[in-house]
Length: 67
Image 1 (cartoon, helix red, strand yellow):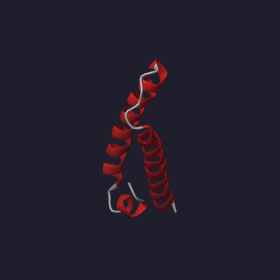
Image 2 (cartoon, one colour; image 1 turned 90 degrees about the vertical axis):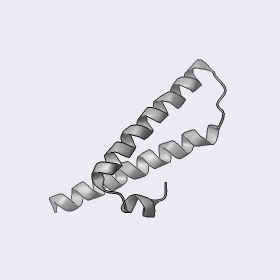
Image 3 (cartoon, helix red, strand yellow; image 1 turned 135 degrees about the horizontal axis):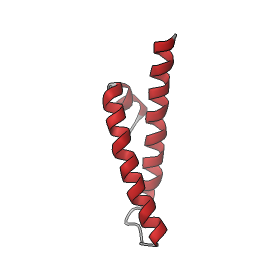
């Protein structure tokens, strides 16, 4: 997901999306730990980056509310 797409989403929806991505990441980590071949290894990196982007957006929103 791109940064400009994340800006359009409300913080509540970002939280839901973050939970979904974390579950997906746990699934990928389980596949890697069992040694199962991944059907798309680049997807892991994309999910990690999206999680980081969402966390950044949530923290920026919190900082704006405090200020």
